[in-house]
Image (cartoon, rainbow, N blue to C red; front, top):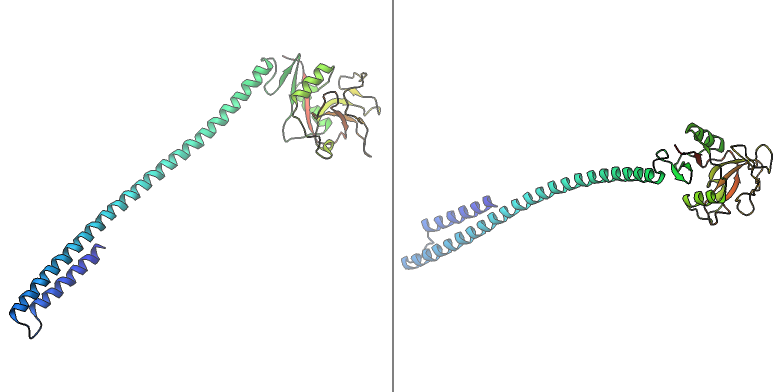
Length: 254
């Protein structure tokens, strides 16, 4: 822009100079002087206008430079805030993990291992993970933890466990194929005779869902599972032992 202004000023000066050096023919001296005065006035007006325009351009240029500086400062601030936000997310995850561990320890009063919960006089472990297992593999996992699949001795224990488990929508079609949690009872030795993993036979009828156990399917259903649907007194069902499900371990407190 400044180069263009200089070019305009130079062209104006040259034109005026030529006019002054070679005035038009057949013009009187007085007329020539008046013409020169008019040209001087025009020249001053043009120069004044061009200087004002140049000043306006310089002001606009300074404003543009300030805007660029502000944008760079804003970008630096934005990057800093983004880094701080990521740091806060990490710190939040750590705090949540520590809070969860503290809650588990408080819930078990320090009498159960981390990840286990205390109900009355027993510690329980609910797998609650994407790693589902068959009934046999679930029991092996419990044994590796120094425990066994849960044995439900009475209604109080049944209700407490039922309330602790996540609730499932009973409207889900064929929920028994994938849902439910393995417990330590089976009738694989004698159909219809349900025996706990501690070799105690179920005598009081249990807490079966209406219509269960039914030994459904050609492969049979010989392993017991529990699910939180509506009624703790109606929450057991028999499932195919090779199905993969979550599981529930039990052991005495330390």
